[in-house]
Length: 384
Image 1: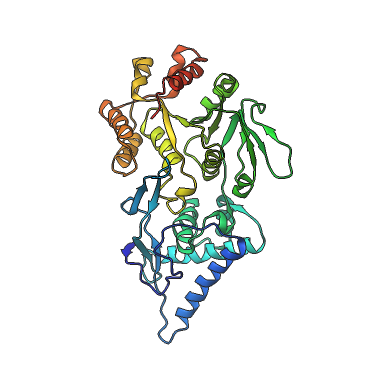
Image 2 (image 1 turned 90 degrees about the vertical axis):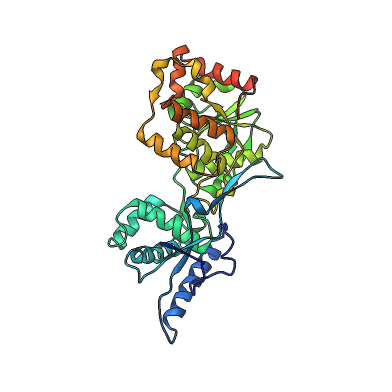
């Protein structure tokens, strides 16, 4: 795709210069799909019929910026007004052009039936109906998020596509979904309580808590250890994990907690490596891929550990060399605009030493040390 000014006969909405995605009700989303189809038909039925290009927001890093909060501590990624174009007459983008209309057709049917599907379910439906255009999950994901959401300016959830959630929550939190009994997240065992992928349900869930901290944990195994040890009884907190890179539902849940309990600090416990920092930054700022909606999920997350000043707690033999993938992530982060200076310093130290450290390395002090480590960091205010 090549960049363009965005002036095209396929410019469906007068507010196309505004880079955000709306949350719409089903009939509103259907209306936007109908308008886009009508515009295409109008072009095809004109005296000089031609299929114009689709102008879509450019999702490259060069088109992203970070909004630094003035009246709030929350900063987030947003996309500027540079566009790319997808054309049916260009051999490189012709299939991508057709995919947009195929996905919109299925989304229209989903909205009519008042159903919700995951992107995985959407992939298999498209693979069955249009195998010549969809051969992988990545193609569906890219078409939905990079093309259809950008074209229609509405969220993925507004199109009837539900987030698949890997997230878990445990600790001093009561959750009550509409019409159901309240769930005590401190009594769900070491597995925690599964966060639903239904964003509307999450938005209408009642939350009650006497916690003083929200702690985001990168790894499921570490989450399991902290919950099994009932660390939340000693540190009044709520633990949340997305089991790695965060999905939309877990990010939405964390954001919902941050607005429901605005005085609770949100602290992140991640590995001391570029991937751990990338995970933290996704919770904190959002992602370029979801740049049209990042402001809905961004939270003021602080980095509690692991950090460079914790390396003295870890045996030298527990430090392992950076992997090639780590170096790629580090290079990407260092070239981005999102890193604050102290985060950039941490990442530079990783690159200079060529080393990485995992949270599990702290087990050299015993399996119950994690709770003490977190408590010490909180008491000393050592989070950035």
